[in-house]
Length: 204
Image (cartoon, rainbow, N blue to C red; front, side, top):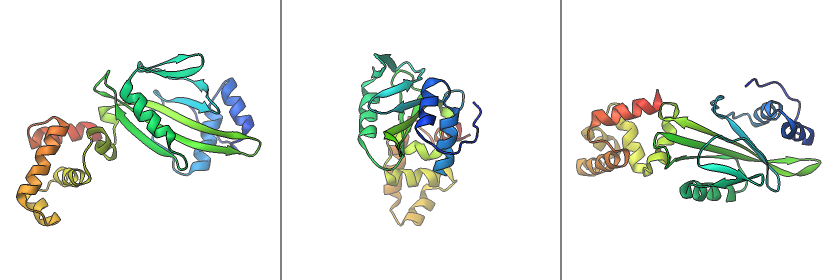
């Protein structure tokens, strides 16, 4: 997908996207945003919503399109998406795992767009990713780690021993070991070597 330059993000751009191509709108959105998201171009799908889904292009087995609207079969997906879309204001990211395909994750990004001559719209991007394409920063969401567990995980990944982490965090060795055990359970590994291998698979 080639991203061209765009002067502004207006209602004409939206109409153009609805009719044929979304490149112009996407380019304008990135130009307006200053914080482009990581995009896997081969998997990128765009939804533009204004009082309902206008254009949906999703190739993912958890959803179908009924009467021009998104129908979600996966309950976890629906609950997470409902919670995500109920939030207003700043743009945000949501990452969660698909029950249907354990190695397949979905990232959803949404942002409210306000146009001078039209009603507010929401610009969406939904794309699938595999383990190897998942950023380390998303691991907390995927494995439902606590803040403390995430800190310990990062220190383990950086090469620290349990005793070193205990000193750095001013916590007992037993407390750190408890965190490590919880990390093992949540990431479905039994050894530190297996944990490192899994993290390397996610981040490289």
